[in-house]
Length: 293
Image (tube, rainbow, N blue to C red):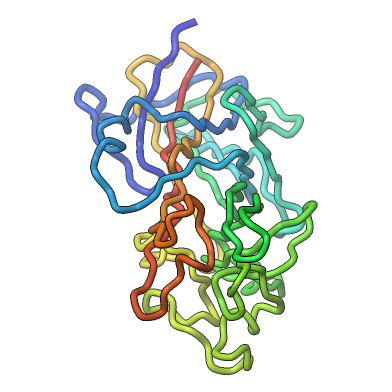
């Protein structure tokens, strides 16, 4: 079956010759989510640009969604595929390969009509990465980065940009705060990680944002626009042909973890951190591709 692909950045819609007008889809039978770990064709040239940063692709990737909504047009009502009550009830999808596709439908049928976009609310992204310790060598860690918070409306503990470590599906503490030497071990509670000397009072400053309300997640564009409480992205459909009936949302995470490897050991760790000459690091938000098939 034919596939029609539109490539766009996670935060910003790109323009395409011949696809200047948003078109609507008349019939959608399913909406799926997948993660690609290989380089996308559209990013090949970008990947070849010389960089002082070390690039790594995670071994696994998790996405936690609060809600997904198909946006109706021409008098067609929006269709909410799901809308979780809070972080604890969000739908979490795990990926370890390029072929897994998780359906986003929850026992409903999408009425025929005109749909011209899809809106995602994202709680967090999680990836498995090698982390260098001084005493235990290189360890694989599950690192979670919150794009939304659960503190403002849910009485939770997390702010946008928080980085935490997950062991056996249990969150054990915050990263890139106080006490990271020598093994990059997480710190808890949050105030101990993100205040001077862990005093719970004097909060750090992350990219001009007070750590009481923002974590240290290092993507500059995200930090400049970090939301409260929910991170939301809207994707307009730009298909020239809409004969397909299944939408696949593809998160490409190739080389999404980038850092200055000051220690030269090939993994991010405490030896790379330098207070006098701050280390550059970031998780690049996924490039997203919508495929209609």
